[in-house]
Amino acid sequence: MPIVSRGFKGKRRGEGPSDRVPPGQYLTDDFPVLSAGPTPHTPVDQWDFTITGEVDELTRWTWDEFRALPSETFTVDIHCVTKWSKLDTVWEGVRLDTLLERVETAVDYATAYCDGGYTTNVPLADLAGGRAWVVYGYDGELLDPEHGGPARLLVPHLYFWKSAKWVRGLRLTATDEPGFWESNGYNLYGDPWREQRYWGD
Amino acid sequence: MAGAAVLGRLTWRVATVLDVRPETARAKTLVLGVDGWPGHRAGQHLDVRLTSEDGYQAQRSYSIASAPRQDRLELTVERIDDGEVSPYLAGDDLREGDRFEVRGPVGGYFVWRSDAAGDVLLVAGGSGIVPLMAMVRQRAEETSPVPTRLLYSARSWDDVIYRDELERLAGAGFEPLFTLTRSQPAGWTGYARRVDASLLGEVAPTPPAATFVCGPTPFVEAAASALVGLRHPPERIKTERFGPTGG
Image (cartoon, rainbow over all chains, first blue to last red; front, side, top):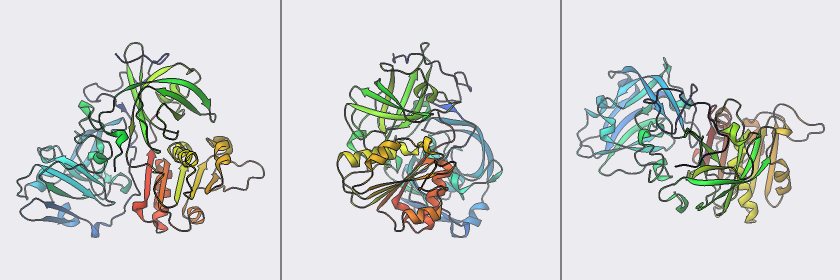
């Protein structure tokens, strides 16, 4: 039993449906920004998306080719490890399934890599099955650079650091290789419903 | 690179308030005794968990203000009026002997190592000074010779957290510079404008070996972008942002 903090009552209790707000999270209407360094600004004519690593052949899309892929607009909840959750966020982008169906691979893991040097690791199974996207639109607008534009990964069933901003591709790997935050104290997998925030959670 | 201090599972530990120090009208420093605290590195943060009598819990993250030590640590918390945790921690009722839980330290990237070579630029907006203060304090405690310049933006002189200590620590390679964006005391000789490329160009004419920027998101975004525009290598700029929510 955790110790009681004298006089603490809490004011946000009951806020939001408990089946949509994971343990330890609170709801926000804002869209906070968290980044480890300066925001890169990549013009779309210099942007491409590449799937590389343990693949039969490298697959690459230019911005125009990427935008010509089948896309969808969808609504999901997002959960940041810094404790905020935001419900009903509306995104536009391409399912990872659409990208991965072009790729032949025998391995089970992916590392997303990004402008600015950020990386994050996600099991391929979590990128498949309509649970992950590369998005370029947010709330009816093009995605702002501050929030990861021109395009970011979106894996809403994992903590939001897995939804890598400024994503430029996936490197497929035979083993689950810790990315940037995963090497800096954060959980290798990051399931918000199991509160997997840090190493050992 | 991850430090030994964060290896293994982070468990909730009981923190006991040993002292409460007012810093500004909105910010207080809590001196905490934490049994079994594994130590931390300057720049890291921790999670705080409050539990009410009926078992309701709320968690938030706070930067650690004190230099690394094993037996006690300090948090400086700015009260956010519509927040849930900060009005409790930085409110009028918290007193010596009160207890809550902490888990940490967290974050292996926004950290300063006192054995790192090269000069340092610290850029703080408002309560973004807190994790940078841990670096300033560690540098002072270890009498590190690393040339360190701090540019600290606040609305007014009364909003400057740790101002007496910062002025006292000035010298021996540490240079605190203040910019007061809303009001300045009579006879003010420091800066009185927003942190932008021209101000950063004056404060850091050549790119330092390491730069740490911490503050609200628009502040960090503007400062980091301006530094990149001044041809500071992006990989030498580490940022920590406080979202508009929190509390």
